[in-house]
Image (cartoon, rainbow, N blue to C red):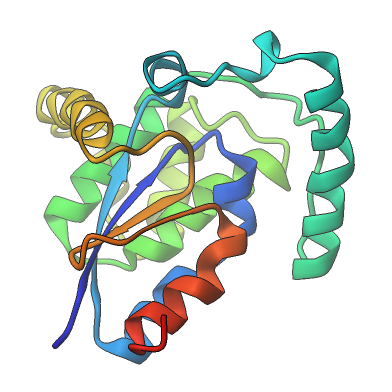
Length: 200
């Protein structure tokens, strides 16, 4: 039976960036479908027992400073540990992803990764309209989607947060399979792969 994956993430998440295109590759290998659910991670943290990076204990941030470059090197991906435009307003890029998902004409996975890459590898401000339009175009979507569906995008963005809380999501990236199994973090994608194969 083909599974469905609800993918909860933030366009500000370095760990979502480091997932690269692995989710899409895994889903394709198993015939699974994906619903992309960008959300306000800064609102999710306090509602699920977490804290925004600026509020975390220094020892946790010191570990993060080691872990992110390690994971980037392991994945063979460029990473600017201190992006010029982070944190920024994640809503505009999230609205564009929501509009693109409804439109369905381009490569949604490529759009998501393009936005994440713009933040974490290219030092671009993903809150800016020109950056979002470029990411849309590069992924095969009409750049005008950056302007359309803002109201519905805002509603879906807010709904994604509530759905995440109800689904016991507490971080990003977070993968919820229709089997009832959840996987947190890009370092659990191998486990997701095994689960979809019926081995875990």
